[in-house]
Image (cartoon, rainbow, N blue to C red; front, top):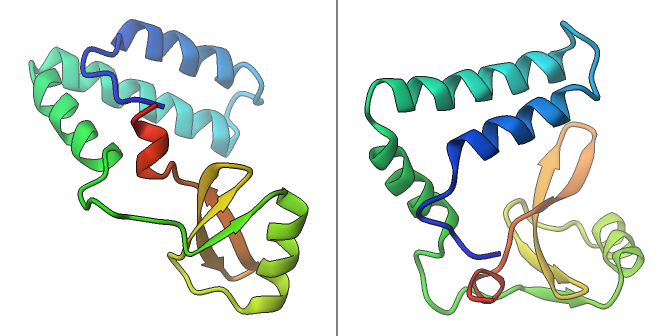
Length: 123
């Protein structure tokens, strides 16, 4: 997954609209997607799209060379077993079947959040 410095806002808005159709009107998910779409339109309307592109680049591209997964797993099943048994640290990076994830400790328990590793962004 490479950063696209010229991503198309209209395509992003159409994607958000398509995804939002899967949720009931007024649901928290639909409201969140509507807010995301409105934010993109707002940024474009006030002429700050290039500032947003730079911000997006900064948060989606690796800032530190040498960032590596602390653990690697061949399957999601292996990773889930480790997560339940190991007491994983919040923020820890892991690789599952070649894809990067970050451990997030929530009140309901630890979960994996998709977080591409630097080598994935270079592909």
